[in-house]
Amino acid sequence: MIRAGIVGGSGYTGGELLRLLHFHPQVEVAQITSREHASRYIHSVHPNMRGVSRLKFIHPDALEEADLLFLALPHGTAARNIERYARLAPKLIDLSADFRLDCAATYEEFYGESHPAPHWLGRFVYGLPELNRESLIGAPYVSGVGCNATAVNLALLPLARAGVLERAAIEIKVGSSEGGNRSNPGSHHPIRSGAVRSYKATGHRHMAEVRLALGDDIPIHFSVTAIEMVRGAHLLAHCYLRGRRTERDLWRLYRGHYRDEPFIRLVSGKVGLHRLPEPRVVAGTNYCDIGFELDADGAHVVVIAALDNLGKGAAGNAVQSMNLMLELDEKTGLEFPGIYP
Image 1 (cartoon, rainbow, N blue to C red):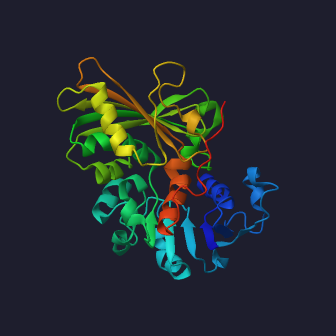
Image 2 (cartoon, rainbow, N blue to C red):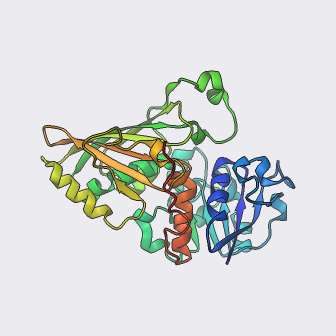
Image 3 (cartoon, rainbow, N blue to C red):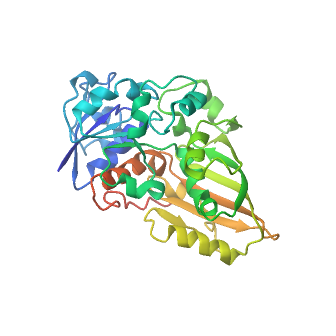
């Protein structure tokens, strides 16, 4: 049994990690930290765990050695204490943005400050299994992923790898849980409720991860809009292709690329309400659903993707990466299909 700890367990990502790991057959969550809630039962913060776990939060200073630590901390925090965490556990998964990039200058460009531990950047594997599976197997240090970047990368990776993507313009609609569990003026209920508010029209930080995954030679731009939804990211990408393609060409490309991927579902319905991906269908899961419609000219395709920002966009993806790090079946603990309706 793997003895794991969650550092920063009072947030939404920490709570989702706890839920997933509690039912993982080969992992025990032995400790979970919170400065604010130390000594309180976890169900006082994560009420879905009431009657499921008797675990209590501990203060971060009381953290003990473990086989693996998940770092679910605010951006910049893990990097400032990375030496301590590495002494406490031989394997680390950091879910913040601290170690997603491989270049300190790029980090400063997108996050507006110098990286606290630049010599650690090259030690972490970017934790997207569909991109870096072989490197994740047995790796000691793995980064998390940005939820919006993951939606873009998974939606466009087959086109980019095949060399058929000329450029893309993307709109991502996101739920309120992307903002975390700390309230702010934009999350105040009378402001958020009923909103369709574009809050990052250009220059989103996750663009750095898109460049890392897809390369910086393809012009890709995306904007993010907050809508009245709690969990989920819905991507709609206008993709302009090199040359004309048929629908069969594109299905062959996507199916070939994702044939063996356990958490990518290609949505190809021709009739019914759910013939294209929808975030509600993947809520609580580690799946990313992808579909598309080809325009009549054969050179413009609209790719649509949906994922749970707390699942495939964060905690679920981290557990999938953990399974690869530990050389387990990567589907272990993650095959929950969600609920409907």
